[in-house]
Image (cartoon, rainbow, N blue to C red; front, side):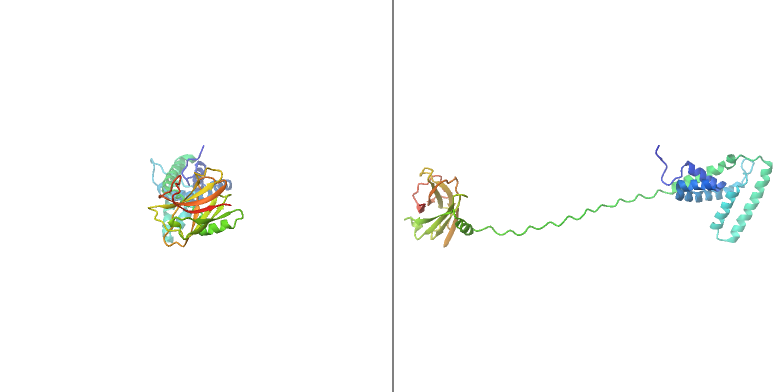
Length: 302
């Protein structure tokens, strides 16, 4: 069965030993047993019992039912003397109290010769009851130790997040074209200007990689266009397809005053056998099938 006593309260065995300690005194074995139970708690409550005994001493001389209480045991009397000596600072006061106690004790001895001696527990039962009452009062006043506030767990600081290294800017179309030209399997096809007015004074070339299906147009002198009116469109002729339906390579614009431009080719279909490249002028957004009325540049392979 679990112990339901409040924290710091003596149990029954300790209480018996404490009462005996202040009334009769303890044998060495009993003193060791009391120390084993809880030395710190026993010492605190022994002092409380001794104070209770001091109060009981004053009441011992008062008649109860026409008879006086039996004389105090020697052990208790000695303990009371020690308590009084420690408590009172004046020797005169101590002498007065000692004289009063001696007179009261003489009266108690005289009464004891004519009255039958009470049994041990009958004579001191009221002392035990008073001691229990004092223990209860002191135990109530002795509030249990305040609970220890939980220690807040401070999480370890997170490791600093490494800042990403600045990424280099993406390569320009001209840089990508130069890298494609450096590949041994890339094709370079010169572009020839037609008689269309937009091609007057134009020169250029095409770089195409059959493996990656990537390519670039390079122009110099191609006339600027108004994207709201028309755009340039790239076409790739595949030897494995019908000539009437070349592969769309995307649309582009030429800004005003642009001396040279590099345009990426974005083929919408796989080009297995590139045969020729052409540039036409179409409506904004381009067309699916070109009528080829305005071809400005043409380059054939082989």
